[in-house]
Each structure stands twice: as structure tokens, then as C-alpha cells.
Image (cartoon, rainbow over all chains, first blue to last red; front, side, top):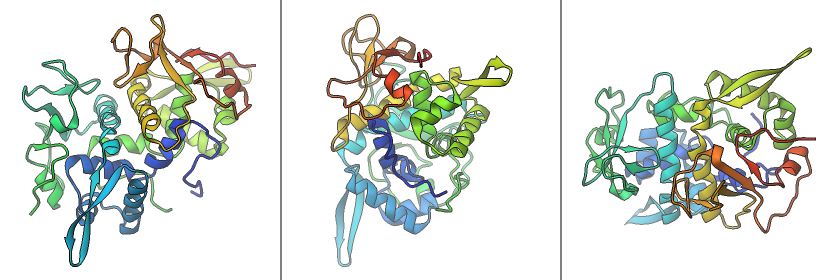
Amino acid sequence: MGLGKDYSGQNCTFARTLEILGERWTLLVIRDAFYGVRRFGDFLAHLDAPRAVLADRLETLVNAGVLTKQRYQDSPPRDEYVLTDAGTELWPVLFQLTSWGNRHLDSPQSLRIFRHVGCGGVLAGFVACDVCGRTVTPADTQVEPGPDTKFLRTDRVSVALREPHRLLQPLQLA
Amino acid sequence: MGLGKDYSGQNCTFARTLEILGERWTLLVIRDAFYGVRRFGDFLAHLDAPRAVLADRLETLVNAGVLTKQRYQDSPPRDEYVLTDAGTELWPVLFQLTSWGNRHLDSPQSLRIFRHVGCGGVLAGFVACDVCGRTVTPADTQVEPGPDTKFLRTDRVSVALREPHRLLQPLQLA
């Protein structure tokens, strides 16, 4: 499209935030990080993004302080990508986008329900619990498939997410 | 980039939401709609987006039910773009993105403060008021420049927004 990636004429925090988060695939990478995906090959398997694009997005997010690299293997050296505290604070953004899509898409595919660990209430509105009314952090949130979910994808991340899973916790992958 | 605009392999509400909202400029168009911008030329003046791109984004948002066209002049026919109820429900997304940027960008440019009309509290966290604690709708939200704002832009929308302005209300433009 030749549109570049910055909004150099837009001197507002919102535009600058979009320079980091608004690129194609970026928010899907972050979504996956909340789901517990950490390794390059797992992101690649789940997203079907071109390899070079995914590498670029991960590097951008590390440089922006949204993700951090953690060495998990020394020989050969391999790193995992983990949300920083700043990255974790993106949860309300992702939840609100999904929540909006659930309410307003013509045919929403509610593949995920977000539920409050402990009391079991479903999250709604402002990332609060509809049973106890408390604000719920992603660490106290469980992701599980909705009742009418059709499992279309068979990669290992999709398969792992067929079971209830607590956000931020690493997925148990085959 | 040749990446296309859809995420055909991603069968989740979040990805489908991004197909509508994730294109370059789109969220900035919506941001402006919250600020009260309604006319094509005003969006164009404020955003510096290429004319064809802006036209495409507005059309996409109308088709998606985020904006609606309202005729304001018959001869020649001219329409304004106004947020629908569904579009208005995007407020938490935009607020959370901005709020995140304010907290986590290296040098945030806090050009806007969002304040609760009536009690005067500043909005924080989950779009609630830090004085009365209530959830605040955009209709009850005032936008005003922050204390250290440098007014870099001189187009008429930027100028109008130098004064406190209630969200969703049409800007008074020269």
C-alpha cells in the first residue's frame, strides 16, 4: 500500500501507540502471548503469518517493551517471548476488542469465553466479573472454548486451547 | 507489503474484529469521530491521510455498522459520518489504547485528558471516574488538552480541540 508504518503528522499518544500496536499481525501476536504462546515456532504455527513478518513483529514488540526474551536453551541458543508488565497491561485493550466483536460482528465466532477463576463468573464489559463484580486481571482469567465452538484448526496451539487455560500461563504443548 | 487485509486463517472474533478495525488509519478515524469530527474534509484535514485511503476507511466503517451517513445538505448532496451505537461502544477500546500509551510510551505526549463531566474527575483504568468511582460513558466525557500540551498542528480540528470539548458532540469549526 505504500503507507509506511508511522503517523508522523499525528502527534498524539494514540497514534504513537498505534505505531507500535497497529501493524498487521501485531495484536494477534499479543493475543497469543496472553494465551500462553512463547516460542517462535508456536506463534508461527498458530498464526500462519509469514515468517519474516512474525520475526519483525516480535522484534518490534521486544524493542517497545511489550515482550521480553527469556533464554530457555543454551545450545543452540533459543529464547521465549514473554509479556512484560507493560505488555500485560494491554489486556483491557484486547478484551474490549474481542468483547466488541462478540457484540457487533454479523456472525461472531465466540471461540473463547473469559471466566473468573475462583467464582466462575463470565467476564463482561470493563473486564469485571458478572458474579462478584470485581475487576479481574488476566492472571485470574481462564480461557475456554465457547459452547458452539467448531474446532477448525489442528495445529498444536489450537489443540491445546481446546481445554480451559489460565491466561499468561505457558501452554502445555505436545 | 502484500499482506492483504484479512486473516482468513484466523477463525476467531478477535481477528475478524481486526479485519474491520485493524487497517491503517481506521482507529484514528474512529478517534476523530469520538472527538466530534463528522465531515470528510474535516477528517482529511486532521489526519493527513491520503484522500483515497480515508474514503476507503469511511466506507468500510459504514458497511461494518460503526459509522452511519447522515445527509446534512441536499444541493449538492453531502453526508456526515456519525458513530452508530455499535461504534460508540468502541470507546473502551480507544480509551484503553490511549491509556496504555500514556503509561508505557517512552515519551508520552499527553495531549488529552479525559474527565468526567459533572464531578470533574479524571478518567483512569477501566473508563471509570477517579472521584465518584462510576463508569463513565463517552457522552459524559470531556476532552481537553493536557497541561504541557504543545499545539503543533494548526488545522481547524486541532485548533477547535484546544478548548475542552464533550465527546460525541460536533466540533464547532470555523
